[in-house]
Amino acid sequence: MELRVLRYFLAVAREESITAAAQQLHVTQPTLSRQLMDLEEELGSPLFIRGNRKITLTEEGRFLRKRAQEIIDLTDKTQAEFNSVEDMITGNVHIGAGETQAIRLLAKAACRLGDEQPHIHYQLFSVNADDVMEKLDKGLLDFGIVIQPVDISKYDSLQLPYQDVWGVLMRRDAPLANKDYIEPADLKDLPLLCSRQSLLKSDLSDWYGSDFEQLNIIIRYNLIYNAALMVEEGLGYAITLDGLINTTGDSTLCFKPLAPKLTANLYLIWKKYQVFSKASEKFLAYLKDDLSTAMPPPLY
Image (cartoon, rainbow, N blue to C red; front, side, top):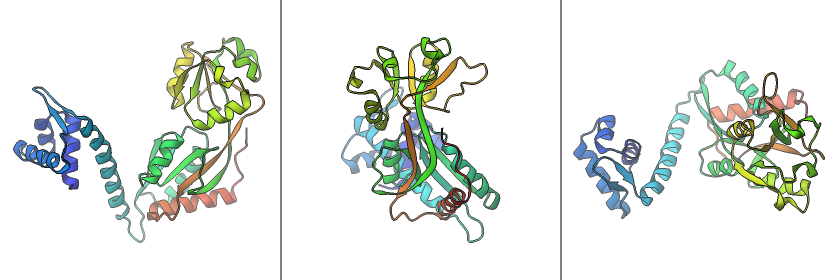
């Protein structure tokens, strides 16, 4: 498979039309059709369902779209890394992280590095720990931030001087809003929105006790913003980390920490034996320097 043909395939999948894709790619429609048929023949599977109005992907086509996008992304990332010159570093640093206040630490390092190397740019992906590690393994990320307990034994890591605190996000007029903290008994029978993170399930199970499976978890969410909107509309109570949603001023929401206190350590991870681009290597050096010389941010 040629990269050029994979780009052709992705354009057709995106436009759902050979004609529109050919115009975008500045190739003739017969040439594009021939390339796609050759690709199907090479793979031994039909990739498209050709209709009168639009083209849709077969199951094999959907699989190839995911793989082709990963291949193209990795290729573009590699080419960008080779654009660095000796005295001026260019390129992208790819970072994956869940929602956490610890991203501020990386932002400070990037800001300081930007004064010296203004041509370094960053690609930030908001994903959960499983996605972070999958993308690291495939070479699509340089670094990831994960929250323990997660098995990071196969990665190099740097513990961040930060702890996230778990608690409950709720409306200010909720019955529990007058409490200073939330105890296990308070959650019984409440409609809960809970993070999909496996670490939360294990930690929350230990915190709550043997009846954890009896909790009324009505929604599993990935990132907290949309879940917070549902809480604001009165759907339920979201178990989340502190500081991710603004609960100050005129906000209709408030956050109450769990008691006993439930915290999580955070780690920056990267592949062992990773050969970094100059941009990524420089970023890591600045981050390590910041963490070694600066006072750590206060723990909740």
